Image (tube, rainbow, N blue to C red; front, side, top):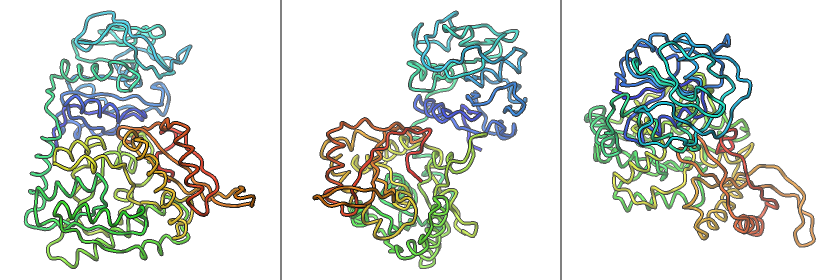
Length: 511
């Protein structure tokens, strides 16, 4: 098993993924595992430190989540965050009770003692609190090292045991110097070095792919998106002409996407094989309205198409995919008590009968890291800067049944919206932008005539890794232009709405 300097045990916090990301940004590799991970598997990772994440439960509740007690006996540094702090306090003999006043939002952190974990950070820094319980009495051997106005034990430590705990969330954006605090834990408490970067990751993956593939061939599904382009480039570096790149036109692509993908790979000298399977996909999606069924049908059909294509070539035993860490987290509950959000077509949507052995070199990294890897591999910035596009394509941007007329309406609306964003410079200022066909009709007036047409939703978000996102603050005049042009230029639409929900509680895609 791979050596992981910092292991994060997940207790269900919406912020858990950010802990791993912040550590990686500081050059320290970290991975998230379920709170109940077997102690043998944790030991096999040979970690230098353990972080217990936050979580929604109360440690004193009957159904609360607790790790294997052997975790506390590993003899390596430990940091508890929020719920993790309360677990540590309870295990070592302290007491945790419901707080008189729940604390959510910003607080000022006041140092009580000097400590390496606070190195190069300011006394009085702003941190983010989010808790309904509090530590009433800290365990013997622990001391408070920081307070806030409402938290007498905002940070505690047992220096002898190298056990630390924060009541606040250092990982979130609102904690001014939280990244430094996490880095200090890794560097000064765990003695980790900042050696992890995309250059090293690329070399590691290339060597791993060579060893796994040997003299066999790899079929790589490419879409022209960032993830599959990076995977294809990485494979080309590793195995050369043993790579068989296949682009499947599933009939669910954006306008002119097939031509753009073919041109892009041609300029890079990659011999792309294009398969038109649009009729197969659309016929199987006919009448299907449940989003999970859509995803699984699309996933299974992709594999069937790849299987048919693989039989045309000798020696293909592997299928390469652009699966990301976020895909894995959302598709299967690798995060302890966290719930499955949705199946991704390349994770939860794969059929049991699939005979390919998977190669997923991006499985351990986040979207922003994929972009850095792409630049490391020499891909052009305009390719790396493309907005994410889901594997199931436009099928999950049409509410309800997927059919050719609705796909055409959605494509036209999407073209108009992206055209306005590019012209105003907002395409490069946002993480992802797209339109959704709601299949909700309403009354309108055009040229003194009554209309009863469809509604399109514009969804534009800002994010870093896609695990959390906020709706983009687009100037009203730009939104007005998008709305006016869509209604004027796309027949069948008489109303445009803007999605102002964030993730969580919503997801970025609608299905």
